[in-house]
Image 1 (tube, one colour):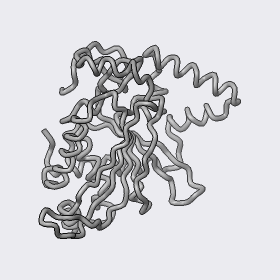
Image 2: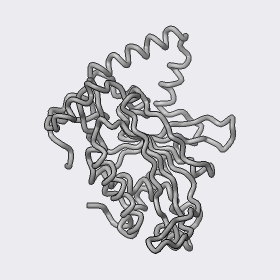
Image 3: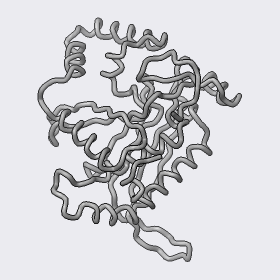
Length: 287
């Protein structure tokens, strides 16, 4: 396991206390006490000039239900990034730094592509060693479950809450956040709230839309919000000054900068780009 040591005092969906931190990392949570004031917005233009034709070749001859999509590729690479760069998997609670026990990404699923269709929250856990086909299968199974109209246990819990009168629901929320601050949030509540995760990912490319600069959620443990845009040709100036069109996608990260420093974040973004430049590695189990 790559997780930093420390005594486990939170439940499975949270993490271990990080004991060894540089002095500044220990001070920052006291200077910026919430994710709102610590939010850092970082856009990245992921170059897909290698990955895009590779993905087209990979899908040749595959039936539609087995086709690999960019979202599958991104989640595979992103999970590996979290495994290799564990500081990304940290969060601040009670002005102390923790590291998640697992790698989990949450995202929203529309049951149908209509304005009236309900939205479902999906969360998938990874080890960071999964192959691309394993991630594709896991994501597709989760999407299928979410789009069914039979309620899951999480749906039933949420539906029970929303039927409560407004003041009662507000009181329940206050109790829940108090329990969270005391490291006593019940697992069933954490599993019903998608912001208890390593990161929240939204794929606007599926709607042919650009990636927005999103907010971080004040509650929960997700220190990173990732917005994916649409793959399109972009004008790029080569080293010799030639302007060429290269397929790229805009990815916007909103990050709680208290969890790590800018140098670590930039190096992480560079590593993610290398994964898209060498996509064959995603077909094999990660290290």
